[in-house]
Length: 155
Image 1 (tube, rainbow, N blue to C red):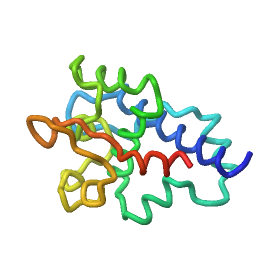
Image 2: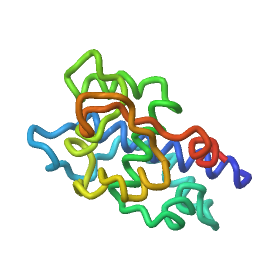
Image 3: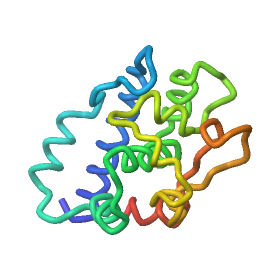
Image 4: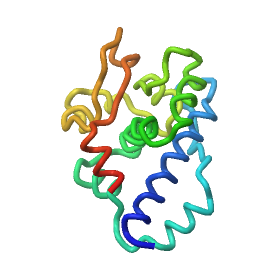
């Protein structure tokens, strides 16, 4: 398996993990554990074959992303890369109009949430790794990954 294939498999295993976290949305905001619907076989194969950092690893290092910020980025990438992801967002939000991820959804479903990830000076927004769409508030506005970042992550 070449480096690009390893990168792709690692990325999709991470996206599956985030989709699993959406499926296991806790009753109370921010109380989720690691949430893991990732394909164990792919995850094990990728882990065994990785000798170098993936594009996601590099991006997280360069921009000093916290694990929660990393997962927000994956949440946004998931909608673009996985056809079942938008439906998972709808299911997790409980609102059929919300097929895009939001900070509110991230805070309610992803492990180790922190409000500082939402700040304009935080890496995701400062470096425009994600885009904040029009909405009633910062927490309910749709989020979208920057196209260049998405292409970098996919190799």
